[in-house]
Image (tube, rainbow, N blue to C red; front, side, top):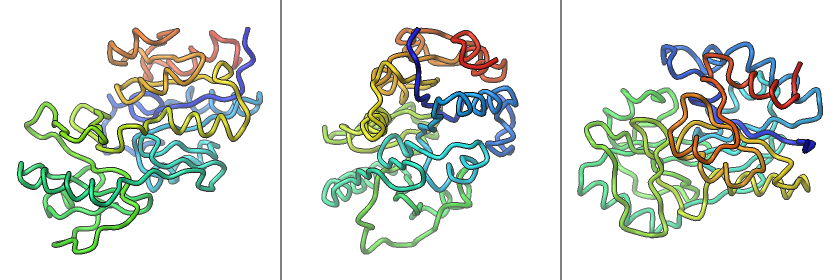
Amino acid sequence: MTQFKIAFFDIDGTLADNELPRDLGIIERIPSSAKEALRQLKQNGIEPVIASGRNYLMLQEFATELGVESLVASNGTQVLYKGKELACHPIPPSLLKETMLAFDQQQIHYIIETPDRFLATSEKVATEDAAAKYIEYVTDIKTLPADVIQLIVRLEDRRSIQIKNELLVAEKVAPVVMDVHLAHVSKATGVHEILKKLNIKPEEALAFGDEENDLAMFDAVGYPIAMGNACDALKEKAKFVTSKVGEDGIWQACQKLGLVK
């Protein structure tokens, strides 16, 4: 069997159980069996890495508690290895302004995301969003930050949004959330950058996921594992479909591969 050296984990719906109340913190929604799996993987020489649509600000709060030092954050638009930034992929200012104007004209509310800030011009979004504690409400943005990596759109009564510029992609990261970022950037981008840094081959890497934004990551590793609660497209691409996260799916998959005891 291949000697795996690294494992990439999505958070929501993969490590964290989305069926539990959302007012619980991320750590509280991660089963003890998954935490133990991460501990044993690291103990056995397999580096656990979080690969999430979530921002570094959110991830750093619990990554350390999980013993995870490296992150593929914001769908690969920011990559950190052992706490130091390895790569960042901001949206060019002209493209960003064009997209924001189009959203404003369609009355689509959005959050502007940089590696260390969230901004919103809608007071409703800034105060009622699930991530409200991170969001700064601004009445007008005269000068956009130079390092905007994503626009976050809450779908509300929309099923999806359309992006006319082919340089950008709108990626569904949760049932009611879409992230807009550079089309050539994905979780796979971050995976490749970390594998290159560590001189690890793709076939020596595992990945766990449940949503559409994990599809590219599955193509970037040798052994992709879909959760039991994953979307159909991800299950079709996976080499193994484990149980739901709340049914100890992470532990069961690692145990099946002989990575934990």
